[in-house]
Image (cartoon, rainbow, N blue to C red; front, side, top):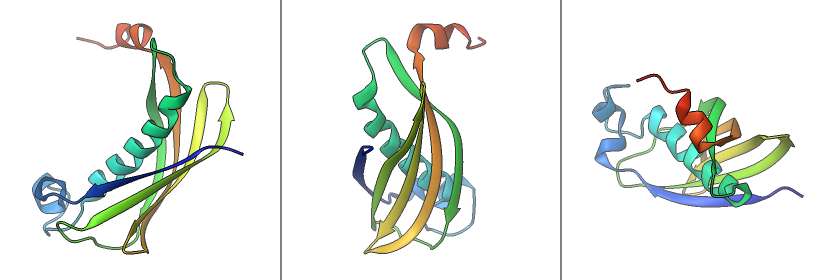
Length: 122
């Protein structure tokens, strides 16, 4: 059985579509929903890492299903569904008051921190 993890976020004004420019309304933006989802999977995946490694997101397919108001609590649940070498796959669901507001399939890879940073162009 693969691991699962749940994390809770509260929608701040800086998380809204209006604030980030992805829309014109004061509701949870899709970019921030994705960030909540990636952060939850990253936290779950951290159990698999040694101190010289980190994980990086490499793919996400997301459906943003319902709007979420400012100050609402979003519960994000990540379930690892596959592991292929250093690549992990997660199914993620986000809920507000037990209503599904988003779902995603997300892949993360384990990378050596130093090796990865050497690839960053200045």
